[in-house]
Image 1 (cartoon, rainbow, N blue to C red):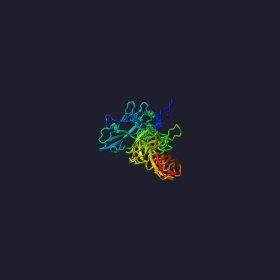
Image 2: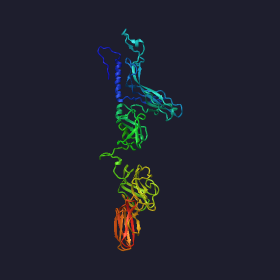
Image 3: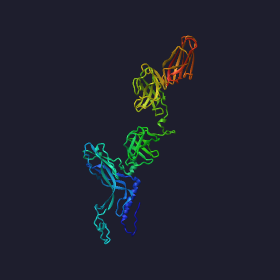
Image 4: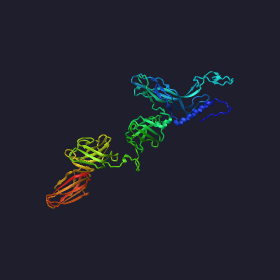
Length: 586
């Protein structure tokens, strides 16, 4: 800060006082620019209706800080200086009443008036002790120092005594338009918009509801220290829509810097990839990524949540550090104490713990219970663990708790899916007769509100499209004995046999019965997974005349859907061969 120097015995020069005032103004300007930068800032200047209400409004005391020429014109004995610009402070100590706002002349229309502000130098002639204006000041009379001149050269003319920094206000009218579609005019060059007054046809008074802050008004919400403490200068309001965040801030953001942090009150939930701009029309929208630097997927932003955006200049993106109430994106965990991504959660789709379906008699309804069931949105997708599962299905209905579509098959099979989503948990039955069902439901008829699923049972139906008597434990299914083969024709080489089991079956439990007309004949069964005897089981059983010899084969692997291969012979007599199914796994 510059200071004038004086000396004992020196004459007093005309510029001593005015230069000191200019030095102080410049110092204050530099302090202001250090705090506010060089963008125009307004403090105060609150807008309110007059009392009683009229068609004008009051603008309260306040200040404007704006870049201006050091001296636009000669200031007393100081020369003009238009080369240098500093942040000048315009002060309004009193409340000012605006001009009258005229309503539009057409019914159904409204008009927006913009109140704009500007810093201005104002030269005035006033005696600050008496308030008299204008002022004729005394000048030195070299011919007779005891008798000063009145005014310059004894002209009697008044002189300006102060150069004031003031807040200049003016009203700019928009264009009348249908109410709701009227536009606010843009501020004039060198001016900043501060308030908008909306007036409708026939209106006779302006009330508080007609006054709103101009969207780009650079008005400090509070004094500087409270703003620093509360963080309100970096807290904005979202005016956009889902997946498009468009925020406004108390002091408009005009440029971005690396690591800039902004808080926003979010307007709408996001459903996928999202963009953000802190000043629409000034700052281009940029992608929003999560903490793992991947695009948002949906649910990370929630309406009325408070979101923290951090700008990364190197990736030209905003990083969503957090949003209250929203899902948090994290990188893949690589150590035991780190948060995991949903896709890293352990478990296998369809994995169950203590699943039971105990169907004591044929019926269209059945109940499945389990301690836990793992369901997924897709293979490798989002994974959920359903605890204490207890749900019923009715094959006579469709939708959640019934068939996915159509009717249950006649003498076929149905697969039961555990399904989960925002609608809760349920069972969904699907025809499983002709082809193997996928682990995750792949049809087009998933009920609304369900997104994750897993196949947890495949059970037979009877001629009445009912679930037959059976027991399901985890992935084992036990049924009443069903004949798969009854023949008197021996087979001495491996012959394929289609079984009455679902295409999803991986293993089958079966037993054999053989009779022969020759007492003591040896019955030989060979049953295999493949035609080249892989997984084969050999059984040699002596028979008594007219009596069957039986043997059980447990859980033979099924590699070709619904098919095993067998050899059946007897050493003597006329045989009768029978093979029965008692269960399967899927």
